[in-house]
Image (cartoon, rainbow, N blue to C red):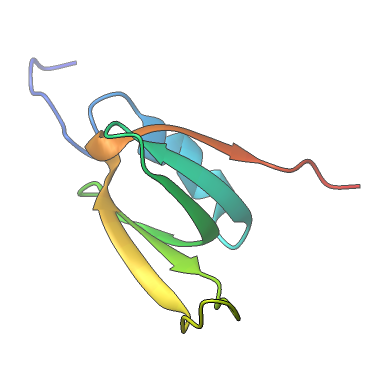
Amino acid sequence: MNGEFSLSFGSDNLGRYLRRYIGQDLTLRTKSGDIIQGILRRVTTDGIVSILESAMVSPFMDELVTVLRIDDIESFSFNLPG
């Protein structure tokens, strides 16, 4: 390395790992304790993640897109196929 620090995909490379799961249903836990469930839509190189949260019937809630910084994500989980 040439001594430059890159913020690509977040400082701990969580974003690089998250990119493997674009299009899959995930559960994210934020550092503030919030839980976000939905389909991973996008992970940008500058550390932004977007999740499509499913619509709910009761109480009624349309689908919505949640956008957050990779640095705000503590962990994520997903179901194994099959």
